[in-house]
Length: 154
Picture 1 (tube, rainbow, N blue to C red):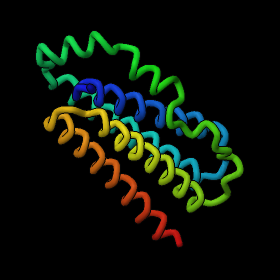
Picture 2 (picture 1 turned 120 degrees about the vertical axis):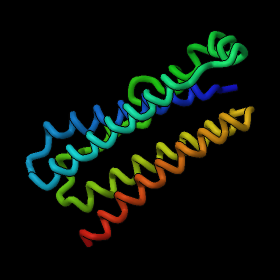
Picture 3 (picture 1 turned 90 degrees about the vertical axis):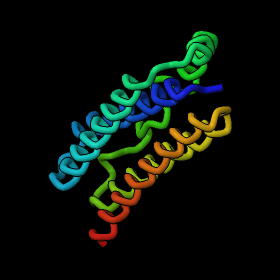
Picture 4 (picture 1 turned 120 degrees about the horizontal axis):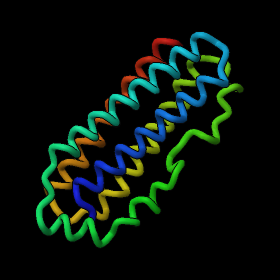
């Protein structure tokens, strides 16, 4: 049902949502260690978004994918909304340690992975499924990096 182009659109939207929340949260945090972490996460999300956009540019839709894309233009927008999988509900000003902040980031990244795993149920072609698996692996690597940072703070 979903093309790789659709998945890349979702990934870009998710990464941009994450970056926006991290940058917005920077205005609410006063502790340097926490602002450094928020800045790093915003930069990571921006880098992911650029990578997904580059993949999207390289992708050439097949004729049947173009037709499918025209048939379901609103489905992904409805699924994503403006704040899908966002951290808007997190009260960053109440987070007092870098460890708490890292744990918040880890949970956000895990929710992103869960969303990608949900999308997997709708994929009909092996090529698109393989692409999504690659994206999930990269998100898991991001969680691992955050977890390693958190472990170093313990």
